[in-house]
Length: 76
Image (tube, rainbow, N blue to C red; front, side, top):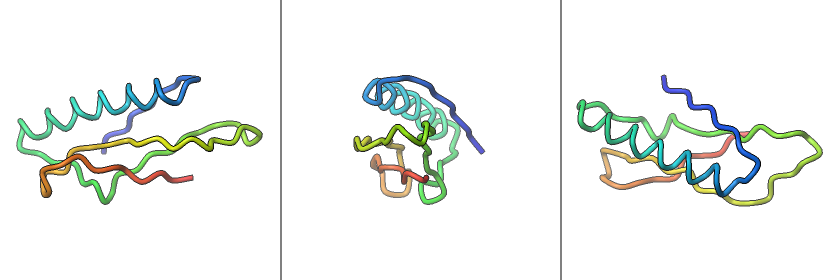
């Protein structure tokens, strides 16, 4: 299991940082002949109840089986 925790007030900055690190992790996994199960991977945005998150963000990870980057599902 891999658990990443990020914190930032700006969602676009957060998205770029997470995607950059996920790319590095996926590259490391591929080099070491491991893979990330995209179907079992997701992300959660934790925020105060009074602050609604309406922006769409795309968190992507490399899927070895398809050979392309796929978006992870967002969970509440």
